[in-house]
Image (cartoon, rainbow, N blue to C red; front, side):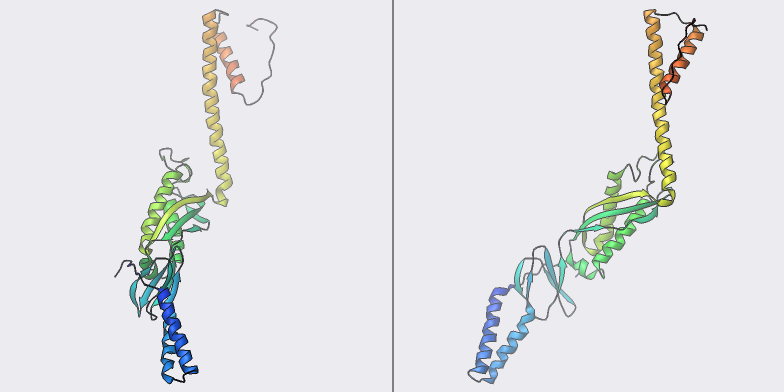
Length: 284
């Protein structure tokens, strides 16, 4: 037996009536009728007591008899089983696990801090009860192991490898999907169903955080400058074309070069330019 088996026990209400009959009848027989045999009914009532139990919604009881698995009770209600059965309580409710922030190395060897949020529940009570010692602890340990493995498969960002399309920071949808798949494979042995798994916290480790921040800022500045220059070239090109088309002024190559230089300085400068008024000719 290596799979879950559903046990449908006897309702506890008829048996509680029988229990009261044995108990009250035995006590009355001893106290009123003075019948020694009435003690048997009292003993039977006491023996029946461990057989009663109840199951709340989204809970279960795993039944064993002298080490032999007898099934799992998942129905809600009040029940009675063999008083010798051992009844292990296992919750079927969804649970939320927020892992600690772990320091791990990404694909490029950079130390990063990462944590994961996992939503899970017990799917197969047999595996949860007998395949692992403590299924709650098993979930914690395997989640940490899965996070470490996942972080080593992706770079934090694609600064050093522009051909790498997926990174921990930019490819969260794919990363979270692979994290769920990894956890499902690891936790299946304990009968655990993964409802959701996603990265909850992600950042560079403290020792390189400032350096990486400056690197990100420099990359953003270079990208912004590239866009500015690209736009400025288009504006200068359009200006020269309009001046030539409308014949507003006749510019030779030297004057065009000077105009282009001045416009590029004005358009690409990160500070306000100071205009200079020429009171002479264009050649001075």
